[in-house]
Image (cartoon, rainbow, N blue to C red; front, side):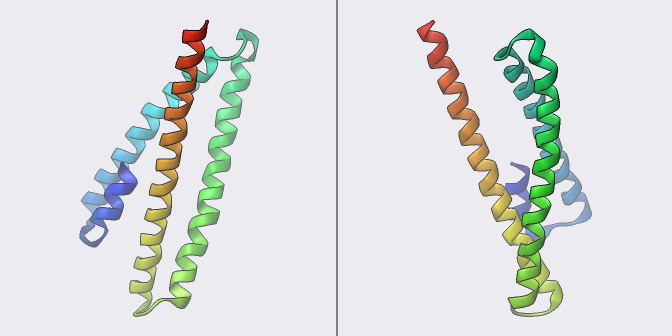
Length: 126
């Protein structure tokens, strides 16, 4: 949701709007992350719960580095091949980043929805 706000509001962004969008992004992350770890912990043996937490933290760090690795070349590519001033080209690269991250968020949402749907079917079968 926060990435979509940044994408839609990009031409109007002020420091206050950036902070509001960041609060929305972080709030959504914090609500989602804790629930996802709790749900994953219920699916493994009790002795492996600590491994679930470690795995989630490692994946979070990995996803952050992959995100930076994907976002940086998009901005750089737009700066190198785009039209207009450097600021305008950087703006366009940032827009590409927001679109990419919004698409990735949608894919993640669909994967979470599918996961819960499969869990529900499995629980009905038991």
